Every structure is written in structure tokens, then in C-alpha cells.
Image (spheres, rainbow, N blue to C red):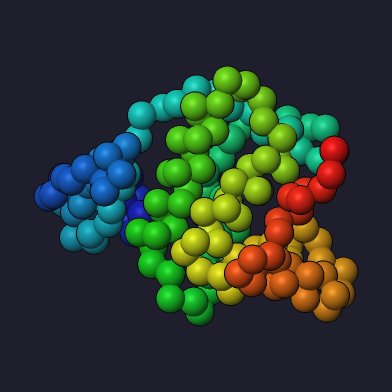
Length: 160
């Protein structure tokens, strides 16, 4: 493992722990050259999930993209790194348990929002505003009304 500070390949593991979800091993390392301490995560390589983007292109699933989107939505919110990692892991686990190896990006976004809504409602609305491409204040108001107790989600309560 190369040190992120000096880029030397000369480190040692000083602590290893299994993550709270049990799907990764967290390792604290120290560079023997410069003394810099850093953390790495070791995960089981899952199935090769492909995400079908809105324009029809396919990309490999990348948990860092989800984490980055969550970090932006949770900026200056009381949401911890552990909570963010937990959401990403839950989403990844659910996707990997899917029978299809190709999943539409829309499904991934809805899944992220389902978990984020429980953690922080303000971050949820921020994420939804970007993901659903809110055009104006009416879109925000509509989403907020859906969050009120007794409100129906999209598609609920429609007669067949």
C-alpha cells in the first residue's frame, strides 16, 4: 500500500477491525518512511453490477459516486461518516442481492433516497432536488408535503 503522503510503499498495519456492518475490514496503517497514519478498507469484491444511465450507457457500479453525492447532500448536517458509509453499504448490499446484474440509475437513486430519508430529512430533500432535477420552489413544496405524516408517496393511492 502506498502512503498517501510520501507515496512510498513501506507501511505497516497498526490496527485492524471489522466494520460495524461486517462487510469490510478497517485497517489503520503507519508509513515507516514518513510516519503518516492513514486508514484503508478491505472489502469483498462483489458481482460486477452495471448501472444503466439515463442516456443508455452502462457503467460499473462505483460506491464512491454514491458516497460523494451523499457527502454533498449532508454538507453541514449532523450526519456522521459512519452513517454515510452505512447507507452506501446498505445500497450496495441491496443491489448485489438483486437478480439483475444491470440496474437503472433511477433505481439506485430511489434506493439512496429511501435510506437517506431516515437519517436526515434535510439532506434527503437536498439529494432529491438534484436527483429529481427540481425546476422551482413548487417542486420543493411538493416533496416536503409528501414527507408530512399521512401524506402519500408517488404512485400510492391511485385507482387501478
